[in-house]
Image (cartoon, rainbow, N blue to C red):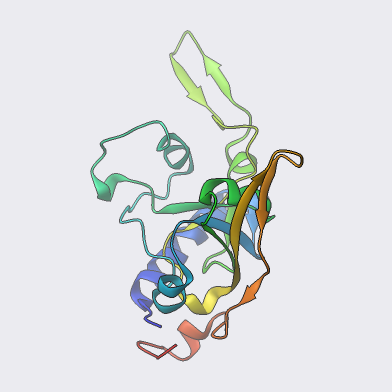
Length: 189
């Protein structure tokens, strides 16, 4: 497992700023993130950073709409949910859903941004542009010690309207906070 402690410290500072602005929307517990990244990669290197440096929640939501931004202008946040079935839809069949305790916690995007408001006279849009979602945003880079385990995503069930999840597989290296207290730089899985 490789850990980038300076990146984690910076991300935690940025998440703390979001927490101060949106304390009512803070989530300090586990979240579920869906991705195509395999456990072979994630349990060794963690969930990689997006490359973005922007912690603006509205811009994070808008990135699903805007294309072609310079990488450093993109969101430094990733999306997650409080229940595993929802991110399975983002990962798709054969993908993975990880249960993790993100460094810096998470922010409920809709609670933080509030309801969508359009001011036609001013030409402005405020609030959440995706009010039906249950997204918890977290800082994109997460070391594997923060990941409790994972599910593989199975086929889509028409009858239940969601993807099936395989058996939960625990991460043998799960140790929340170990990146900080032990200053791990490299360890073998």
